[in-house]
View: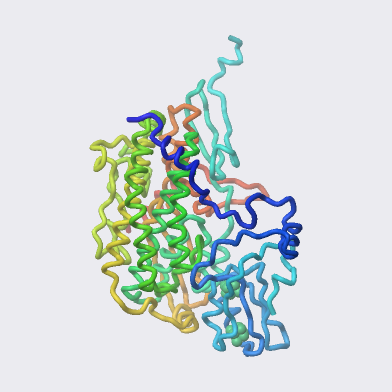
Length: 134
Length: 409
Ligand code: SF4
Ligand code: SF4
């Protein structure tokens, strides 16, 4: 039975790097958009995010030219994120709804769907252009 | 003393959302001074209607819904559901898939128990220990992400097998993680069990006797901490557990005695982290080569599931205890019935004997000690004439007993 067995560990921690990756900047910028603009202009540097693991399932990509409109992807999509556009042989993917399971990419007979490494998808508008793939 | 204060007991409501509780549940405490004289609780605040959604989807879609029943048991629910559907459709799961499922399930146990240990430390006001456990937990999350693609909601189990194989390069990642944890375990045991404050707060606090644990059908680490020798992996081996040598961890193996208190629950969970490391290591060395899924083509799998008729249950030892899925299919795309009984459902009732006679300050740690997960548990919210009536303790207990009877048949 000991008092404060964690104490040495805490002292050591003072000298260590924090475990957290400080993405996108060491301290929270006053405005994130302003910060990103500054990064774009080369005035600030961004701390890169943790690299994605192999076979990461990020934002979906769709090759419209190979699609035959078979609708198999919509059939297996658990989140009902895929819509067959009526009257065409094309689909529309609502990324705001997508749960990134990658089931549609596996079933597509033409290999027209795949998952990219893109994951910074937060948006206050779920119908924004960035969140609709067609 | 005024006459007012003589009117003990007074009622203290805590919940449905309260900073002292990590989960939404409504407690009503009858207090006598600092002491809890009696307690009642009402779950049902986090009902999301997942089963309703599932009954409108095909099994291939449902596996991803089951992932989302619980944020911690990301694989247990899917695993149980897939096992039920596989039994109905007569799908034989390849052996390698069984091993991979086992490895993921054990990693899930490791991260869940470490998460719980952190929460327990936080409830005791020991936040530096919370940060330490959660920092070391990150490594298991990273391995899970490496193996499955996601940190939570793994999406790795599919009916008939798993969706990703473990390739030789990943063995090293797993091995590194196991070595770290095996090295850390002694330190964690020391930090938690030899700390005077933790011992004083947790020893003989929130006691659940073996008899009560049996009567209330408690499952998982909560039951094992009371000395009940139950573990699905040992009693009804599934997946690869039949080939492995898994023995339920009981507190008297470590300390030589069983108190059934919060301290014993810490002991059991921490030792299970070590046990899981051993299981994963054994799985990795014994994993046979071969395919990882019985049916690679999802379209064919859908056709097989569509033809299936019958009913089955799938049971899995989740980090919190037995996770139970009942599925009935009648030759349609969507299952006819799907019922989930999460492990916390069986464990909630044990709060009552644990909390009786304890002090008000011990409520958070006792409530947290069974590792409750209400998002898994809240399957029923009864709405009658616009009024929400929550099932009472008696109702829930009756249902629980009925369900166990059905299971035994
Ligand atoms: S990744 Fe999953 S949720 Fe997203 S569109 Fe494809 S099937 Fe639907
Ligand atoms: S499965 Fe492929 S080919 Fe068929 S509709 Fe979807 S994207 Fe098009």
